[in-house]
Length: 180
Image (cartoon, rainbow, N blue to C red):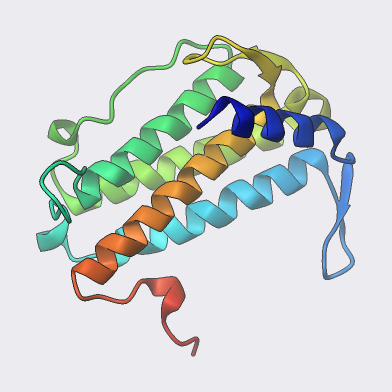
């Protein structure tokens, strides 16, 4: 993520109203809308993780790219980073494919990472999401909500990459299929 993108996310989070009205007319608080956005990208990635054939989990469009499984593990590891920072813990890097040998293990880890993130967002509430935290990589102090949105954007970028994996493998991603 570029410094400018990061600053835009932080500014947007700081300037965003504490309540957002949805198309259904519901009014959501900052933490509620953050959790809904977090869960929505999680839903899309989990659908891909469950759908993609296990015999293609180590598929790479080119040799220098991460495999399908490694992309999902990277997202889950990044989600864990958010959760650890939100809890005031030191992030642990445990996204190595050697630790998650099967599709079921990858899917379970991805699901847990999104569930844990959503749980901490809910537990923090609006005031907790405005808590200042230090990002592990850039050592920048930001509101927790900015870190959450940065990682949701990060997940969205990997979602886009995985759409490419589907297409190169001759498959149609779940979100692109006709709705029943």
